[in-house]
Length: 59
Image (cartoon, rainbow, N blue to C red):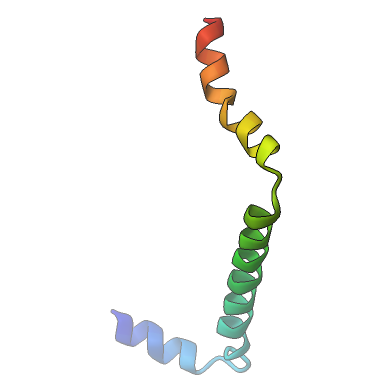
């Protein structure tokens, strides 16, 4: 089945740009995510990490 899909996709003009775009989006997203994680304030992380526990105590 993969052979049929591969042959069909190979006949489409300009299809080569889609893997490059996908890889670029993936790379930019995770670089931005890592940047946010390393620059986030410790107080904010501590406050947000307590949200699930605060909800259980109120019930």
